[in-house]
Image (cartoon, rainbow, N blue to C red):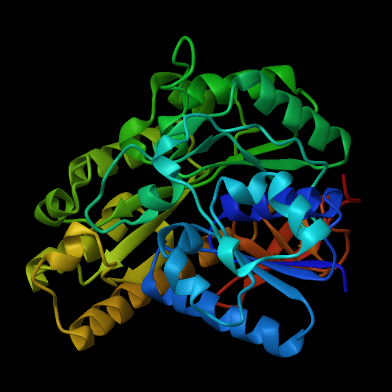
Length: 422
């Protein structure tokens, strides 16, 4: 064994795990397990602790290093675990020097925790990578941190304030990945629609997207990770309308469909804003598919308020739902609000998931008979431009195959390859 990385959470973590592995190897670190954690829910932290125990049990001689958002926000929790050798913050995990002295001298008990004040970090470095191991598409970090303070969210305290990667660095990274054979690039970050506010000239996400597509004409697919639709700028809407290489799938940071709950969450949009955005995008890209994050059972949510979240699935035409039963995070304002019974939260989560499953089934049925270019993710599976999963035969990971949709399973499409892979 040399270095193994276990990654939880978002696409940004996946990107950073690749950087971590590279920097740790360059530092000479061997026989180590790096656990890159997520803190978005209490369940995510529980899973990280479970992974730590498993890593130690399965590899008793390895160094176990814990990092990521949960390590940043709950350093004491992980440092108290006897299975953990070292806790690194979200800044420290990307620095070669964090691993150099570990490789040379080992880890002393007095320096078990290396977690600095994330709010003091003012820049995000653009780490150039050649690809992501085992991935058919490549993630590129364009932004980190968040300036907003939603009442349920701990992530700004794990990631710090919003910082953007300069456009030139982003384009260099994408050019490098495309030259290495990647057909699809996903722009990722914590709040990517806030991109550019801290850069000279304050370019926005739409400016960046347009520049990427112009400067890297060989790129076949550009995809955006989760977006905050209220921050969508005019240039982004123009790119959506005019360049088909920007994939027609947008995952919305929606969180709720009721205005009072949105206000109590301290979100910056109302339900009408989201509905209008979806209508505007669908008007210029009729083939678009939307996904969304929705929290079920937020504090003070009445049945009437919850019904508004159910209704917005149809009103926005949402297809891919990520449902989160509310989980109070210590230190957030929502944790101090009047809580709903866990049984009610669980029941509402189930109803919301069922609503999402019905929406997905309708989408899948509507795809049958169509021809879609499918990016092969691994043998037997790929995704359409709308990010809908397809089961098919043929093609190698990373290739794009013209595919006729011949049926569906209720969860994914069934396809028949029509052409050689691109």
